[in-house]
Length: 295
Ligand SMILES: Nc1ncnc2c1ncn2[C@@H]1O[C@H](COP(=O)(O)OP(=O)(O)OP(=O)(O)O)[C@@H](O)[C@H]1O
Image (cartoon, rainbow, N blue to C red; front, side, top):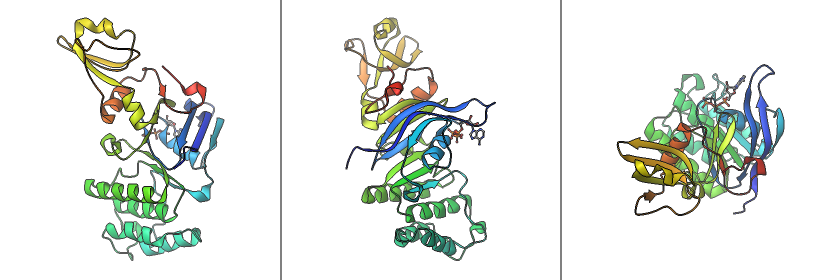
């Protein structure tokens, strides 16, 4: 495993037309190769835009993005474009013909077989979740170095999602695939992803290895009257219930453990706190271009 980046962006910005605002602005980050990166953010944050840039489907309005060439990249967007008149088997055959020399027929067939539908079924007769499965089979069958997934599991039932996620992660680990996956299902990301990119309002809010980002935050619980104690720290979010205050913070020195109970947040707690506090200072851990680094 090496730490060279699979995607590197510098001052990246996208505007969909002159009269529109910036969908992405001043985004600088490095995503390490051979890792699974979670791309998180509210609706309209810029996640799909970022994935389309990495896939080479969109050109930046400003800045640069370096990513592997298209033949080494598989991209599964939200609107999985399959040919409705083809059967599942014909679709996989097309995958093989389009990817000579690298097509992994076994892997693609396994993903489809787990769905329990017939290879002779026409794509148009499949449900949304079943089509997602075929799109993922096409993407993984390509044996990509970089797999870009835009909310891949959104229309799968919980069991199918759980199984497919397991298969995807095992396959990525076995083959050293770099994965970037956007998702709104925060619980799904915990344990599955080792790198994090949180985007909000077109800007990078958090970036770095998941463990390091979590370790950089503390959940503090203490008396509301002692709120001033938190002044030296970066408070992402604080809430008061009666006389008790709970805060998610990045500490810049010791806290009085006689007054404050401290614990590390779960990834979900951390992400929710940042999503509720879009004005909190950004944090970048690891090698990134200087402009992405915040408090
Ligand atoms: N083709 C387009 N033309 C014009 N504006 C667009 C286009 N695609 C995206 N946008 C705008 O760019 C911004 C970012 O959209 P994007 O789809 O990247 O967000 P997202 O984080 O993927 O959202 P979601 O979670 O809802 O999928 C939004 O304000 C959106 O309206």
